[in-house]
Image (cartoon, rainbow, N blue to C red):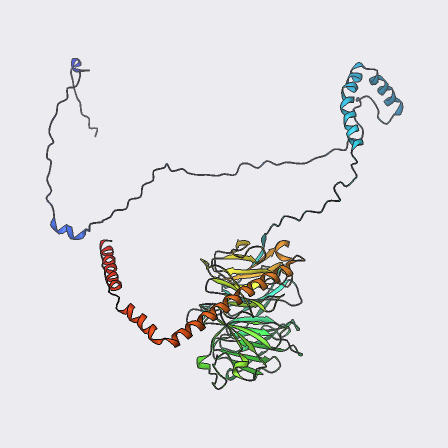
Length: 564
């Protein structure tokens, strides 16, 4: 049904000027206030409303059609002849050449080109093109360009965090890695406990697989027998693998001689047989083992600091081991980093408790994540912990000789470069790789590189110094190659680094001596006048102005909090 409305108006009413007049508002409806709705709302004071006073722009980028270019060349051996001239006939070409030489245009062209050609010939005759100029001047040093590039990524199929990395001692392009995925209560999140042997040239699949009986926390190759590997388990046991015998371990120590807690670190030591190693654990004990007989330990040492030889060391008060260091040039000595921030130097040949643990350094406020000696200066070592990196000298025990400023993101591990003695490599919890060089800068890294969006957990240098394998929390191992400037030492680097270490060590000795004098004078003053210290204490106790200021401050603080 079609609905239409017809409106009629006379023609003379069209086009008339409209007449406007003022008229008051008309009340259509009035809604009264509902007092019960007040409980559903709250007064917002102050009100923050962001306002953008500049126009918004949208950015868009596209790739244009790529032009294809082709480089071609031609061998112009004979040309410029007419079509009817046979270039292989000498008489025909000679007749045509005489004809062209008699042409007026040819003569004009030769006269035009001759002055420029003569100028170039005279220039070549004035300069000997085959002579080496300025050979007597000294060669300028090359501009240092620090750079790193990612070679490859090796991904764990189960996505477990990387716990330890160790390079193959003989096959240059292979490394082993173990993975740990446990929660705060050390309960495994996954049933997989595999460790892998990777080939640098093949990142698609591991070159070898190892299947321990439990979660493997550390993994090391035997430097003399590359087919033999040792590892530390979550149960406190140490286990041995042989690549020739399959994926399962060939030997594991019994539980009654194992650590009470997980094995944090295992290291081979210098011995005639090449079969001895030692392990450290958070239970506060270091144990020495022989691969040929894991049913018992060859030696044990409790990391418990005692005041005198009359005191007995106890596992109840021992310091948990978080990191370890061993230098083969000092076969009887080792160093451990503890969970309470100390670095303790041990002597295996010591007979008494104080001789076994003769040196202690208060390194950090938290666990010592890494401790490593400098390859060129064994008395100088590096520690990482509590958002700082510190370089220590065995001659200064009260404080470090060099240290970094507090960092926004902490470092999880650190290591000296085996080829460039002044360089340190740090793995950050923000996924950044930081390279420090003591000869170039001491207040900040000389180079940083974003490796991953996940935290970096461990790293291991190749013996060449140009390659480093870095593991992160998502199970990826990144192989990084460094430039020549970061991988090689100059001829004067050792002397310059020795000068820096001697200078800083001397400075710390002077400060330690001065602090010792101040402490002695303070002690003598306290012993001479004990009443003076009591009087000073009573003055602070009865200070009414201090109490009033504290009361006023607390009242002002409460008012500010109430008004927010």
